[in-house]
Image (cartoon, rainbow, N blue to C red; front, side, top):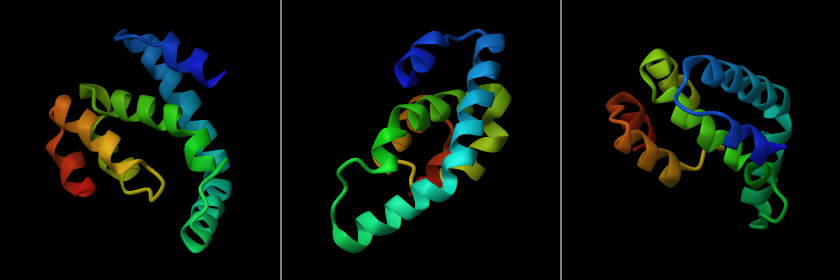
Amino acid sequence: MVKAICAYTNQQDKENELCFRFIDTVLNQKHNAIMEDLAKSQTTGVTLNSSEDKYKDLILKLVEILCEKKYKSKAMEYMRRDYFPIEQCLEICEKKRVPDACAVLY
């Protein structure tokens, strides 16, 4: 399902709005579980089947959408979340020229 959602959107505002709402809802509902998995993986060093890995494609798609003009103001809020993959998010933000989000990631 994650792959279908990520493949569905393109540069059209309507599709990106739907995708943004979906991903935002999923991540908000799973936030506690993702944070618990992150804490366990940091404590034990084991990252197999972590929520971070499960939701990575959704997170990266969200970052792409956040870097668009309409959502740039929200980008910094999301980039502060501990479970966002820093290197991949930074690459997207630099490519889309969103310096505020890049600053948060550094």
